[in-house]
Length: 394
Image (cartoon, rainbow, N blue to C red; front, side, top):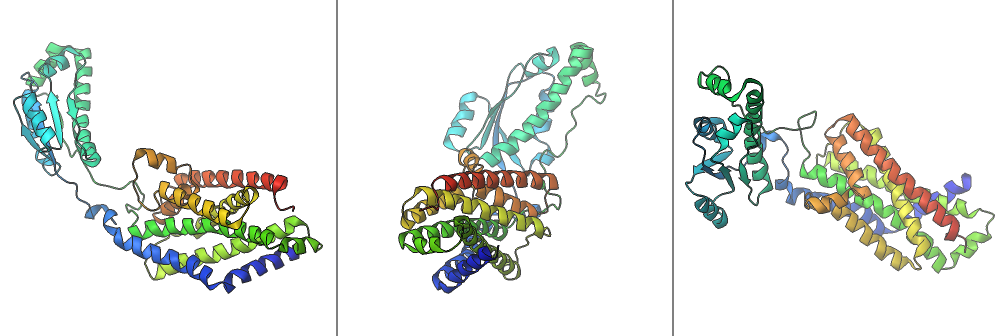
């Protein structure tokens, strides 16, 4: 154990003697956090009170003239819906699609002629919802109309029980069978403390994880350079097991990365005002597991690649691809790319750090931690097996 610590201390000292490494590993992440957190602050909202939805322009073609026609008109003109959608009526399908194709409206709705009749007969019915290009606007309007139509389904259930004639009679007598309208859209938060992350918090977490991953590259390059400079032969002449050498180097790199993480967290907290939450022990676990994953990737690349330059090029490409797919550079990349991000250590580590910042549900954090532990364990076992087969034995 003493020899491992001596090698680790030597590796740590080697890092601190290289000013360029210190500048890149300590200064660059802090600079990127500042630049990205400031430049993209408008993409994030610090609280739900500061967020306003755009009014959606909706065109409705109402072909129904049955018993529910008056109720539909009342629904579409509710004062509660005015902040969310602006409704315009047209008389033909061609007119609706002309407005839609010209970009004059954001959403279109076609109410069938037999809507009331279908409801009272208990048959299948629905509205034709024509969505626009904005996902946010589509979600808002879809939520409003689907809430309304869900109440139609309740009416159909009454039809099946009471019969259409009895339901129509009660409906016309207004015996509490009229639809109850309420606020259909509410801006809120799914987090316990009703807060969300700021741009500075978001990029502090993503940049911390990205630069922790560089620790694995440092370990792999250190081992490769020793092989290239033939210092490996001198190390082999010492009465040390090869595992002692590699463990010492990995621990040294890990200690340097932990110091790097501490500096980033302290500096971002006191200078940038980033709130990392109160669960620092779990933050430490995430940092350590990320370093383990990074070191394992480094050992795998060292075992298969011939030179330090090729290791550096491939490892940097892997880091930037994983960071990009996980949303570390751009928060939203679309459904397909976001799904790919879940296969990266960046996604789970940074997502867990963000959840810790906002003190999210402990069950959610625990599930994330189990994924990080699994990824780290699989990578470590794979790296250990590959190293045992083709690794540091030359």
